[in-house]
Length: 219
Image 1 (cartoon, one colour):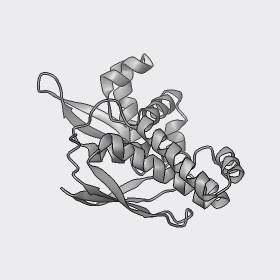
Image 2 (spheres, one colour):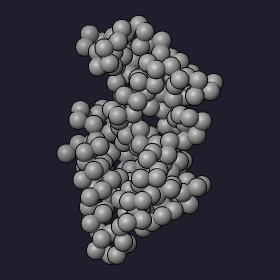
Image 3 (tube, helix red, strand yellow):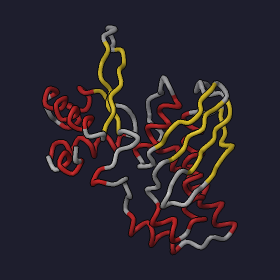
C-alpha cells in the first residue's frame, strides 16, 4: 500500500503526526479524545495506517481486565515513500555552524543527555526496553532489537534521519545523538549504561547501540 495515499487523507495524517509526537503507545479512546474525534472512526483510520506499515498495535489490560488496543509508530514506518529525514536542511546548516572541538563535543553530548531525558515518556512503562524502542522509532531510526537478555540488549538502527546533518558534521551530530541515547536510558533504564556505540555510514545506516545492566527499569 502506498503510504502517500494513506496519509493524503487529512484525518489519518493528523493521527499519525500526533502519534509521532507522543513517542509512546496510546490507547484508541485517549487518541480520539485528544484529537476530538469519534473512537469508531479513529479505529478505522488506525487500521488503514497499520495496513500501510505506519503504526503498530499492541494489547494492554484495561482497568477491569479487558484488553485494549495501544497504538504507536511502527519501527519501519516510511511516510512519503522513504524513511523519515526530519528537517534536513535546517539541521545540516546548524551542524555546519558548530565546530567539533573537544570541549564543544562534550557540551553537545551533555545537551543531548538533557534532550534524551525530555524525550522519555512521562508514564512508567511495564517494559522499558520496548519503551526505548518506541521512542527511537518515533524519531525515525527504524530500530531493530538484535539481542536481549536480563543483562542488557543490542539495538541496530536501520535508518538515519539525521543523514544530511551527519554529512555536514559527523562528530557533532553523532555526539548529540549519543547524548540523547544516554539521557533516554537514564530515564527509562536507570540501572543500565551505554557500552557499545557504533556510528556507521548515514546513507547505509545500521548504527549499533549496546546497553549493559539490569533492564527491569527499577531504581
